[in-house]
Length: 39
Image 1 (cartoon, helix red, strand yellow):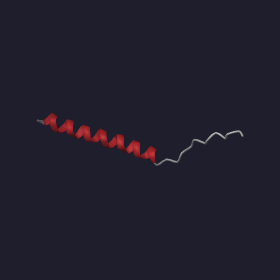
Image 2 (image 1 turned 90 degrees about the horizontal axis):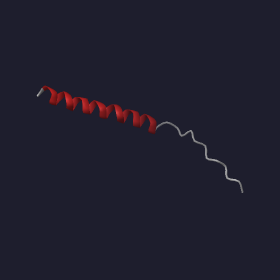
Image 3 (image 1 turned 90 degrees about the vertical axis):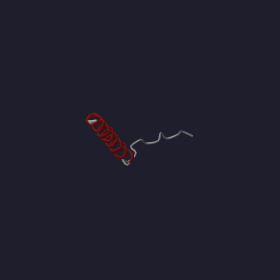
């Protein structure tokens, strides 16, 4: 029973770490500059 709760905690911790990294990257400014088209 002890491993059951530790597995749940580890899964929630992994989810929180992954989401924090995702949201940090999501709110960073975009650094890609569009290539100028020649006319």
